[in-house]
Image 1 (cartoon, rainbow, N blue to C red):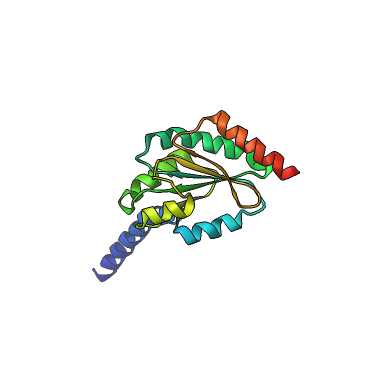
Image 2 (cartoon, rainbow, N blue to C red):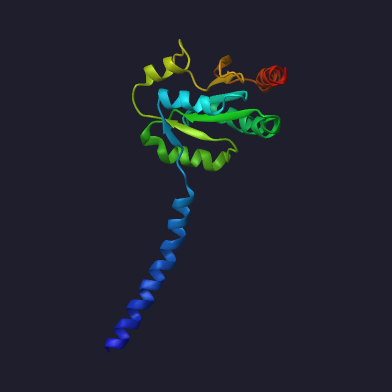
Length: 174
């Protein structure tokens, strides 16, 4: 009887491990974007100094953000080989973490994404782009020198983005 109980326990333990393992590896593969504040954002820009960069601020609840995001991924694929970089920053609240994960899983960005630290929204926005009232999406272009080279508040057109990207890439070669 004791041997039988031991065998049943081992089988149940093995079954529980087999069921839990895929879930554990799935959660380990799900990397939430790193949380940044204004100071970490400046460090992020330093990381990309020497390359032209497009930083897009988005949120899952923002319909124009959802419309624009696939285009940003296409631009990253198209211009990445030429040295252009795209970075995303989610402005979602902590309560929207599940929606943000679904958003990223759906759009499968090839570029890095970060998440704004909760609180101090006004200070964060003003440190990023003085005068920014929180309109989303918000896209800021930086030249290879790390200085702002333009911005788009609200949904931008592919033509406008590509014109700025080509200008930044051309100035990089000079």
